[in-house]
Length: 553
Image (cartoon, rainbow, N blue to C red; front, side, top):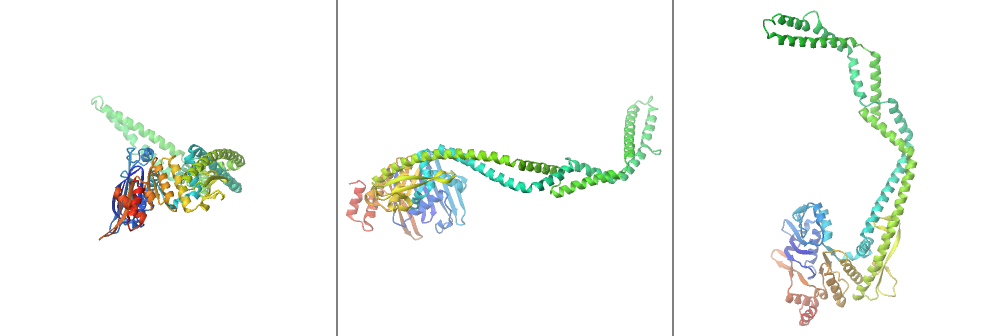
């Protein structure tokens, strides 16, 4: 429920701060006084397009803020999803627009995206303007109405789950058929490429090992010379470090009896000598084993050439990637060979989903038909009280050529205003006044089945007057038992039945024209309704009539 609306520097509104309560409230005012500006401000809060042109002249930004009592709406999950502080009772929505065209939105002082604002706004306010009467001719609106009144949410959820499974199967089947057709054309080429990889008999890590071996074989003489020089340096006849270590050890050992500190030094020299002898032996062994092998070098280079050629052909840089290509080609060829079997299996799966979808669609349609009979009966009853006793309504269902996400059958609302005229599509036959009354009756019915916190009617009374206008107001009064109702109207009969009455008016100041809204007391309300009855010249008869409409006689 909307409890407070604050508007700053929006269009003709310099500053507006007004409270609203539960029940049926009416808003009146002369044409152009600013009633549509209020709707525009509310639309901005609901995620509407931000336009810098809406900023009051001379201001740098505009701000619209509304406070809602949401204690009955169960918004905890939605607020938690957006990480918004929420006490479960109050929600404050704010939208700011700068002259640069930049827009910012906040919920409980937490910045949010406009997309979230739209999701939240759809649960806070339902604004019904004249153009929304056209929804009666839109199938999605009719289906949503039947689902709301018929409480078909579980059936619809089950149907849509199966629909998604069916569409997934259809998509997979189409893709598999395309792949099979393309694969059959590419099979020979793929087999040729796979054969090249198979014949190469590749091993992971092989390239690195071969490259290292090729490098060694190409420099074997240099390596052999280096090892020979190392052998001579370690174990040569002149200046041999091994012999020097042996001599040093013997020299120290000769005085070990008279100087005990030499024992440790002798042991260390022996350890060094033994280690150098081992190194010398290993160097000599390797030196003797190194031989130039042109045949092996040729084999290694040929093998590397094969690997490099395959990497170039397959646009990769490692043997591991070539092995992955080999596995992919083998898998693809296996799929081509088994594609007929896979297609048949998926065809069976798709057919099963389709049959399940038809069954779920039939159950959903039957529930909607039952809801349609109930809705039509309720609407006819309400329309009779609105001066349309001969109105007949029915929902016509037609099987669709192909299932859609909303169901397997389309729906049309058929209407006739009198018994002598055959029912036709309501959008083609109903007059403006009939459409207005029908839409009001439908909204009243929905309000009793759906938790609508606030509904705003913008001149829904178009095309009606007199007694029918009063009856429309009574219907809105009845709706106010379920939700907050705000109605912008030009009809005194409707204005008189509001629980609270607001008047929008313009004022001329030195700075320009500004729009204001006031909550009227009884005296001001009498004058406002009298003006609506008599026009600019206020007469005693109009005042008495206004008092009568307000039951203040």
